[in-house]
Length: 331
Image (cartoon, rainbow, N blue to C red; front, side, top):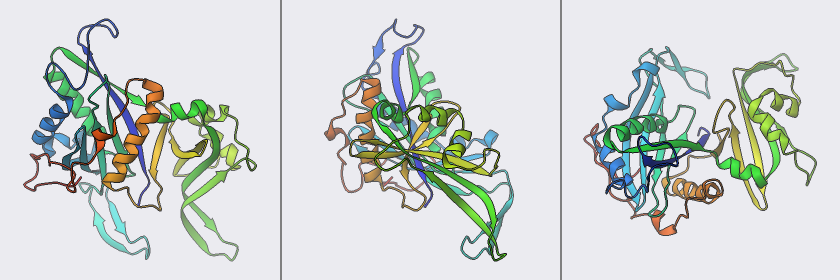
């Protein structure tokens, strides 16, 4: 399975036309009488594939399932991929070509998006799962923001990225730096040419020691820093380079993908390349777990367990979808 990471956005609501902090603030459960969860559910039920596919970016996004997983959580499943380039699909074990891809073909994967709206407080949270195929949640967030702008004439929705790692970076310790590179070929000593898909370079300090805290900031702003840390030439180029950091807080440990050039600088790794994709129950549990750390940043939420209790074996009531004749129950 492919590696998956989690991105979190905080949604807040205020009076339109007023500068931030000057006008009225609205709770997401009461947007002039409407609950954000109901607004989102109704919007999903009318969303079509023609709406979600972004032809300008050759991005295929299609909502394939949606449900009210718990009283305060909606889970949306999307198919996501990119078109625009011809090629072929090969068997990764045998190297044999399976079939040709035309420019209009879009190899897809499945990603999920969660909307969590507490009964109390002034913040809701949109959590999006991303894979190498992309993230359907990015497109959903864009479209829903446009919908809210048109629907709520008196209310403005602010959407801001929240990096859970910010809370960790304040008090956690940097245990490990990993640089993963792709597209490197090597010639073995016996003359055999070997194509290597992914190579991981890992650097750890001495036992019971940790890297300097300042290193986190340098890794986020300059990827050559990771090369220096793991001991490979700075001018060595690869098709793809990903930097990961492992942070430790007491007995807890988490791995984050480092992304420079804007927030969030770090994204939580949900599962590694070699691990299976989290099932819906585990994904929801992981997302709710993050809220306790996010609270350290926003100070606006105290998530109650009953809000995320599954509504049943079928994960709640399905949201009818405009782009399918099927009845979806399990995101």
